Image 1 (tube, helix red, strand yellow):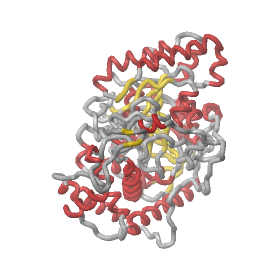
Image 2 (cartoon, one colour):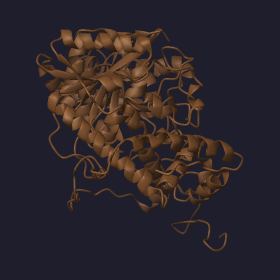
Image 3 (cartoon, chains in turn brown, red):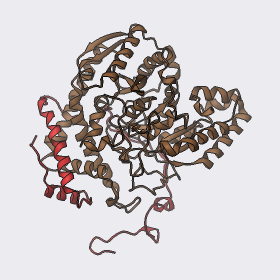
Image 4 (cartoon, chains in turn red, yellow):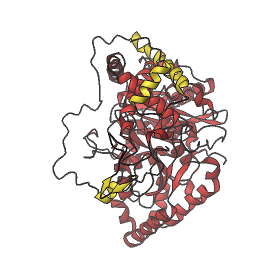
Length: 474
Length: 100
């Protein structure tokens, strides 16, 4: 049962010596052995290695007591990493055939920071291959199942990480979002997912998708845990020239100080006018009311329709994908290019087309100009309000098999996440109820690098609701 | 924005440029790529004559590493560890003019 704990609860227990890190890690592997045959959240497991690290963590706790946590704030806490984080000596496939045997000789900044903070990586999670999708169905290996209903997809591309957290196979997980890939599966799996501002968390060592929007972030059971993990992950990294300068807030303390009274939350009409499933809309409207009850002032605001963001995102993402994946030559590492799956080929080809001479201005430059419009639009609205509220997804988790039906399925599903991704601002989804027995998520979006406010707001929401405590019947 | 309809021949050409294998799937790709290009024409509804492009959102410029900031390196053995074929400390690859 220790696997069911939040990061915060586990840290308290470890400090008080109520249980050991070995027991925590063992509980997670017991859960994985019991349920992962059905859920298929993991691509690779590293049990022996994780248990060794847990033993060392326990020794350190025995020797230094609570002091051990000053330098290592996540000491002994088991986590799962999306399989696009390079992990030195551990296979990193991005769920693709091209990289099916690739073992990185270096470590990503995020996993290095987590490991240095004492967290224990227990395995790598399934994803859409190269993060191209929102269902894990484009994984070249298998489809992860939604823990709430195994006939449904978990969302994606960080579907394995979200399913692993939802089914208590780890205490937290890390994912990455380029156009919705954290908020989408977190919402469909009923967990908390943060897309940090672009540049807030280093991209070094994360298999590149669209470099101008790739944002690594945590997937957790509570907002308090998001804060604890983010304060370890975030910050300037000399290895990523686009990582933001500036102070990292002590998020776990900031969210406790946050007060919703007097905070203006904008409700963008254009988001609520998108094609939303009725039950989903209803649950999100209830969440809006809850924020109002808690003291926030809800203000209707106008924002550019997210439908334009679908087009901008599609052009930018395909372009950057075609460039980023051109490094996979099958010579230095990885298999040859004929190992690319259908989805990756489709995206590389569209990117190659829109970047080619004669089309560049019409597509790529046009999209980058509309990106400016989207950023200006957000800036204007943030002069009037502090935060924005919206549904995280237009509907609840879909059946396995739906995603193959459209050329831009992922883009359409992530329509409510793409504008903030394109603008590089931050957003967080938390569970806000159930529709047809499946989780619904509501998101709060904030200004660039204002993670402390969005987390503060959803933390207040979680303090007075219980949706995040609901667990799937595995 | 040109009204684009991608043909099977164009798919073959693009695939060659991107070094991808698409035989047997040209038609499906042509259809999906055309659908996508059709959708993104929606951007023509927006007037962008007075704005410039945003290529990156952080506003950072001229980011350099300090001399001592980055000591990361990997050994030759590590650098070669994922190559299919290695000879004399080098990666073996297909020749440009001949196969080997």
